[in-house]
Image (cartoon, rainbow, N blue to C red; front, side, top):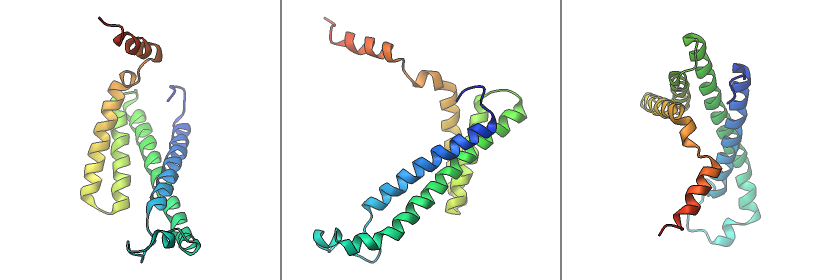
Length: 157
């Protein structure tokens, strides 16, 4: 994100991105789930019938909505935690992203209502965020440099 963005802009951008990712995730889960109460012994014609599709619709809306809200909350937690850490430290640091990752992990743990998940997700997302903040510029390759490196591989003798 650009250096000139305020915390409010980052929080709203993270909420929007999280909502989009959550909606896509919920739609994907809903597309591959068999309706509740149905077994795998149904014929393929029965699985794709109009009544089955109609029975899936309320569940699909719930899956899309709940995943969208969850991922939006995780994004807001990350951006808000990072902004809080920047204001406390008074400078940009990889630890700010680590605190944001910790807050995002706590949000995931609160959703599952499991302390172990909360601690594990918080530690994992904090670590991943710190690594991404430190190696950020090196994680993305320059397109011209990548093309030069890949086209010269076949010309070696």
